[in-house]
Length: 91
Image (cartoon, rainbow, N blue to C red; front, side, top):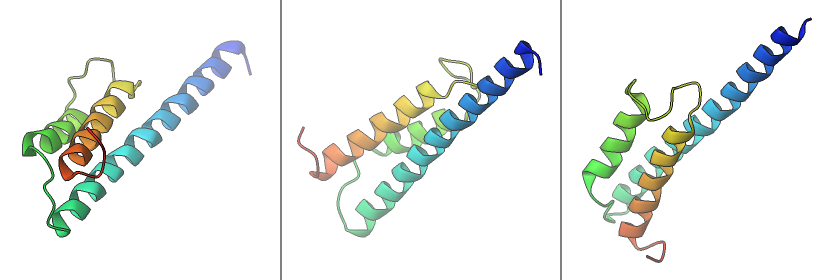
């Protein structure tokens, strides 16, 4: 295996790991919103939740898609905003 193939393999593995983190944060965001709504707590502005989901799925990103760091950041910001509006995290 030559050096180029190794670098490509490492890049693919890193991209897969970052994608796994992005999907985990996405699932956490959806579960948090569902739990807050079932408990009758406010979930914050709707546009925060739907905007984060749209940004995750739309092809236009700040950073090209093999690097999901911007998607993770948007999802974490939405999760934090929802928690702040529910009162479970200090502002």
